[in-house]
Amino acid sequence: MKRSRVGRMLQILTALQSGRNNRVDDLAQMCTLSKRTIFRDLKELKEIGIPYRYDTKTGTYSTGQGFFLTPINLNCKEAMGLLLLVFTARSRIQIPFKNETLIAAMKLENNLPGEIRQYCNAILRNIYIKAGPEVKIDSFDKIFEQLEDAILKKQVVNMSYYLPHEKEAIAIELNPYHLIYNNYTWYVLGKSSFHKGIRAFGLNRIKELSKLDKGFVEDEKFDINEYLGRAWSMIPEGRLYHVKLRFLPEVAHNVTEVKWHRTQIVTFEDDSSATVQFRVDGLDEITWWILGYGDKVQVLAPPTLQQRIIQIAQKMVRTNQQKLPSRNANPFGS
Image 1 (cartoon, rainbow, N blue to C red):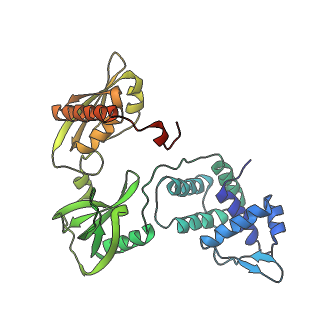
Image 2 (cartoon, rainbow, N blue to C red):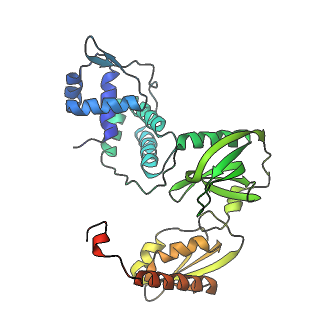
Image 3 (spheres, rainbow, N blue to C red):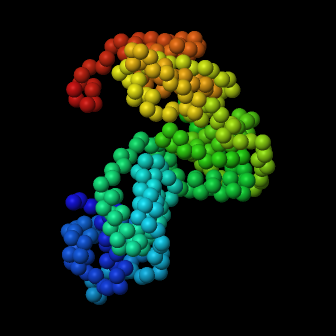
């Protein structure tokens, strides 16, 4: 059975930590891998910061014992849960310090009792986590660490920030309160000098960031759960709406299997359609979610939302009725 990349590297690490001096041929034989794979995985271990030594005289590889943890008293389910959490997070969201996280997982797995390690390896080989879409953030680890430190020390930061639809970055002083992961990317939430209030800023739009030599006092009454309130996602607009939607039978069960919002109420009709109701703060975010279901959803309330959906749908029709470019201009070739 094909082993995962992490599983292969853990095998190599176990061999290196055995106390023997191993040639590439020895490692390939012990791990039942090709020499080419051994060289590739050794290079990756070096790149993520796991120390090993190469003796040019003997042509052998080894590593010291001090880098790894002492044996850990975890049962199969505890170890499996932790490892799966790490590997799931690494593949599904852009977590900070990915290399360090992988090293931590390797330390944990490499020092588990043999029986538990074999159990975890066997299960992980048969679990596939499909990577989801994510927004690319330049200098992510550096920005995250700066914001993390500023939040802990209650230190004001200065951001050179690109607002949506703007070509030039603007300077914003921010009292950072929280880091939030939502909809494929990370945000920092805090009090903005530019907006004179609480706002969320995407880390991917930060051009430059620096900590200022001044602190701030966070409003003791501020509560992130209360702030996000009943927003559909994370941008409250300051007005509550009773949203009522009817999903046609083709999608009704798929939609209602998911708890989209804490105020969600579902009623199945005799024709197998589903009426779904929400009490949400603002309409912008839920509008785009509704549009994703196309002609399989009907807006019953409020009229403001119904009219908004109609206007967008009509504009989509006009846009798609415009003359298309010639077939020769199609980058996909057909």
